[in-house]
Image (cartoon, rainbow, N blue to C red):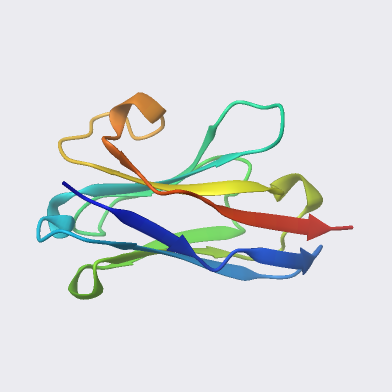
Length: 124
């Protein structure tokens, strides 16, 4: 069993930055693929970023490429999402997700564990 706790959300002006963190419990964190998804009011949950267990492979949604980066520190059981040049359309609840043996990183059904989410609000 893995428990995920997100932090770092908040209110920021357009053009600003935030760094989200997701800390996992469980000794098998290092072998899990970790992902970030977001859900805006009235919309489906959508893929934002993912990182494989070694950190060597990362994936970003087209809408955030060049602005967001994902990284992980397996020694701290933590994955990060650095968000720069934020836009009002980035406003959403951001969720951390984890799972072993993930092939398709962009679909919610690939992940076994989810955090409670952290709100990110970008004002114009």
